[in-house]
Length: 250
Image (cartoon, rainbow, N blue to C red; front, side, top):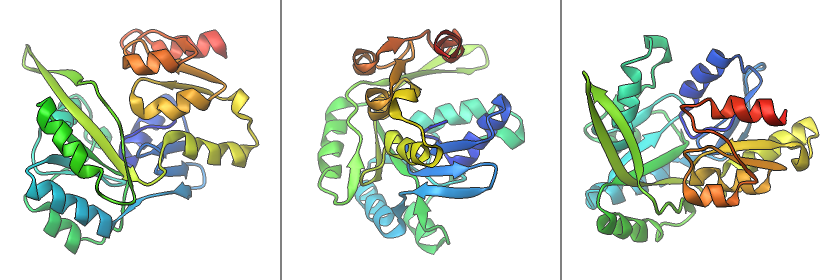
């Protein structure tokens, strides 16, 4: 189960569907053995690099949030975090994504005991501003900046009123982090050939996984680039697309 979310959120999802073997979090930053409760593979962003990124974002008024193993650190409930907050309103307390609202993120991280960070998400609704942000981020050494050219669109409801959230975003990970690299570690451990792997994704952070798996499947709501790369396309996430793919191919 490779996902981009914080580890605690993935464990909740895994428990709901009865998946109790392994999960990958932070777009491939960590591979975790759930049965033996241990990390098998990790490639985190260190505290020093995170502080460098926070400083860059703060000095340039860039909206960002930081993913740790158990929470999302942010200054405000905007963009993707607004959606997480909306999701939380429909979940029991034990299944909510832990959103940590912090006014001075730099000071908070500097003084915290946390040394390992999964990823940073950068968001903006203006394409020109966002492109400028990407140029700045690409000057930072020893990180990977995900290339995403489309807007993310989500809908949340306040009462009965639907509100659309649309924004450009990118994800920053440590150098050479992606879901396929973490999957390869699991494949080595279990002696699985890539031809025996089926991967299902919907966004550009699933690109390497979809390209390299024996059977790469795009969800119906996927970004067009991923649909081009996939060997097969299933229904969208509102129409049981994952179950459809599993029933058809497995």
